[in-house]
Length: 263
Image 1 (cartoon, rainbow, N blue to C red):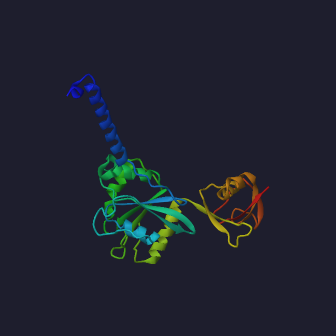
Image 2: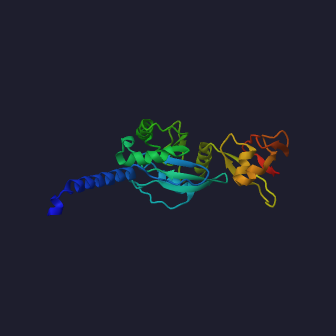
Image 3: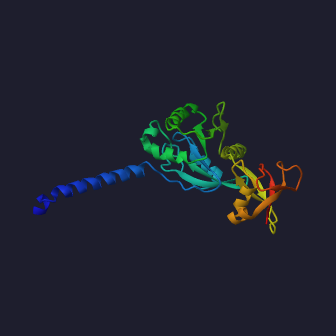
C-alpha cells in the first residue's frame, strides 16, 4: 500500500504513461509501414480496387500460387513475385485493394501507398466492365502525391471489351498476356545490353537504367572490373560499325552486345 501511494507513486505513474504512449506510437508506425524487399532489376506495383483481377494477373505472369476469389479483400498484404521479362528478372508486387480514404490511413492505406512510393512503375488494374472504379484510386494517388510511370490495364476482357485507353488482358488469352509483359517491360524504363565474356558461349542480358555507359556495364560484373575498365568493343546501334572499340564513357544503347576491355 505504501509502495502504491509513497513518494515515488507520481514517478511510477509518469513512467507507465510514457511506456503506454511509446507502445501506441510503435503500433501506429507498424500499421503505417510495410516493407517489401526489392528483388530483380525493377519493382512494378499492381494497383486497383478490390476484386479487379490483380491476383489472377500476378499468378499468370509469375506462375506462383495465390489465393484468389470473386470477393473483395481476398489479398490483405502486398504479395511480391518475380517474373522474367526479356530474360531479366522483374519484381511484381500486388497491392491489396485501395479504397477511398487510403491517403488518410483508411484500410491501412498509408502503408500500402508507402510501398508504391518505392516502386519504379504502377499498373492500374480494373475490371473491364467497371472503368470508373479507378477514379477513387487515381484520387488517392494524387492526394498522396505519388507520380510514377503508369499503365492502365482492363482485366477480364474475355467477358467485356476493354475501354479506350486501357490495355485489355485476359488470363485465358496468352496473346494478351504477352502484350502485357511487353508493356510492363517498357514501364520499367530499363534497357538491355548483352555482355560477351571469354569462356561463355552466349552473351548475357544485363539490365541498365539509361543513360548508361561502358563503365556502368563493367560495374554489373564487379566493381574491380569497373575500376580496371579501359573501354569496350561494341556491336549494335551505338557503334558506327561492328566491333568498334570505344572508351569507358561511351553511352550504350538497348540491344548492344558489349565486350568489356580491362587493363
